[in-house]
Image 1 (cartoon, rainbow, N blue to C red):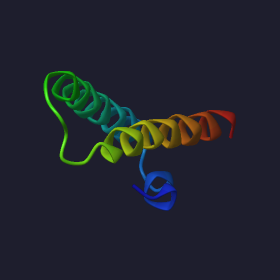
Image 2 (image 1 turned 45 degrees about the vertical axis):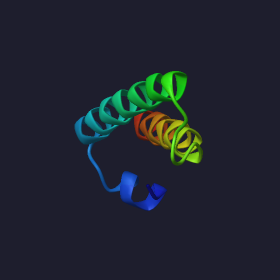
Image 3 (image 1 turned 60 degrees about the vertical axis):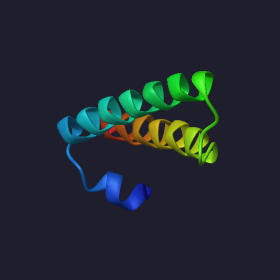
Length: 63
């Protein structure tokens, strides 16, 4: 997800998006422990998305 798209979201939307991404990450980690993933790079993509959301939320809190 692009940072520009995230900056256009409200704080509530960002919290919901972060929650959804964390759930996806948990499911993928679980699957990765059981069997091999089709796209293991997706794990790092999700972690980066969470970091982007947290950064933007912090920026909005400081404004």
